[in-house]
Image (cartoon, rainbow, N blue to C red; front, side, top):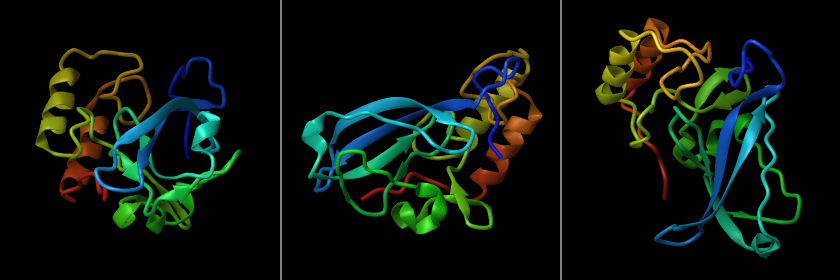
Length: 170
């Protein structure tokens, strides 16, 4: 389902950028490490962290430029070369805060363009206002990934804002 949004004029398997943060497994759940990677159209992304994280438990937090952050349901004990797949079940995310994309595949809720932790009228207004300027390119307000900010983008926000979605975390 994913397409190359980084440069649609020269499509590759590079889809978009993601940030993976590692937060303490106990309150106050402070983010201790972060890395940015390119998400591939097959859903894979490879992140790199210092060797010191191995053997320790962290909540995994996935950030995207226009989606709600997703926290892992539980702290995960990391090992060298660990793998974690949020997409296989909603309950991989804290409070199952993921969208069912198709049978057996879950993903992020799109529409938090200002990254304030909720999808609401503020996001809708921001996208709607930009449609007047017809900006093109790689923007956080482009939810469809077609490099245009248009009514299809704020339709996604409108649908998700009705669900009263917020970042769910411990």
